[in-house]
Amino acid sequence: MKIPNLHGVFVTTLAILSFTLGGAATARAAGTPTVSEFLNAINCVYLINTVPAGMTYFTNNGEPVTLVDEANGAVSYVYVTAEHQVVIAFQGTTGGLNFLWDPIGGAMQLFTDVKIVLNDDDNGTQPSVFGTSLNFAWQVIALARAKGYGVSDIFVTGHSLGGAEAEYVASQTGLSGIAFEPPGIVFQPAPGVTGANFVCTVTDGDPVPNFASDIHAEQPCAPPYVAGGGRAPHFGSMAFLGSTSDQTALQNYALGLTWWGLELDPWPFVEMVAEFHLPGVQAHDLNVRLNPSNPIVDGIGNMSGEVFDVGDLQIPAFKNEMQAVGRLIKG
Image 1 (cartoon, one colour):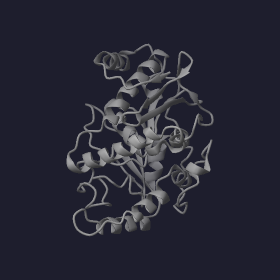
Image 2 (cartoon, rainbow, N blue to C red):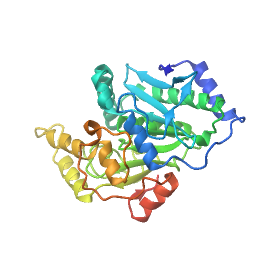
Image 3 (cartoon, rainbow, N blue to C red):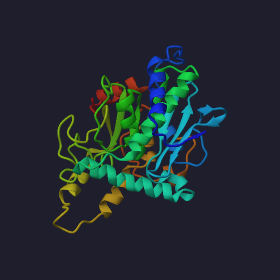
Image 4 (cartoon, rainbow, N blue to C red):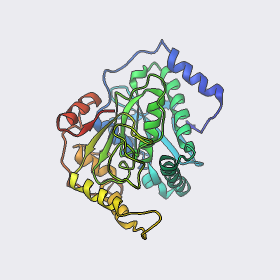
């Protein structure tokens, strides 16, 4: 079942009521999906008609529950793990291999990226992709609750633009999850939402997640740096991957850019995105075997970062491991 972008107050209100009052639902599994399960979920939304190994589609009346909004590029697939946990996975820019059959959607995702950058930097209008993704998440929550899932069984994840959508949804619903390589975003968490069980990965040298106010990396191009916050921070905690030497190279490149002076050279930016941004790089650094995998999506990038043996860990243990090696900033 494909769920379009629904803006009706009635639909959203019913979803919220189901989320907050659905006492009949009982939890089916303890803990969270593993780092590997989250990463495989975000990788599959870049592939065509694939499901992560060991998972199935979350369905309604026998049809997979999905979101496709051509107006702003919001795309999401929902999976169920072997442990009976629901994972809402948001697709990143260009849609990966899906660009072959939906170039318009990929183009709108690029346009939304620009809106996020402008909103982060210049007080622009909040991109509609966030509202679309949030409405979809409320609908999935309502469906899941009706099927007997507890709130603690529902999670969000995404990569790049999809990671930004996951950040926003988590900040408004309190759902746990992992966002891979998302930029910082302008958001105000819903009352009582802390992000204690939400993590963003940031690979050193990757321009996308480093475009944020809570990382001292891409200033003066990024929003002004404020430790632990600022105009466009990440939601939850940040787990840093990769090599600090690559982060230094990114910082030096950003310092050499100017919007109104010297001629801009975008090529180093493109090179760094290709080197450090794609899911195969995070899979290498997190010791995850992507399954299924596709070399067009997963075989590109710099695989020289330090490997952290965290693929089989759930979110709390993942945070503890990264903190123990000095690579976690708590949100």
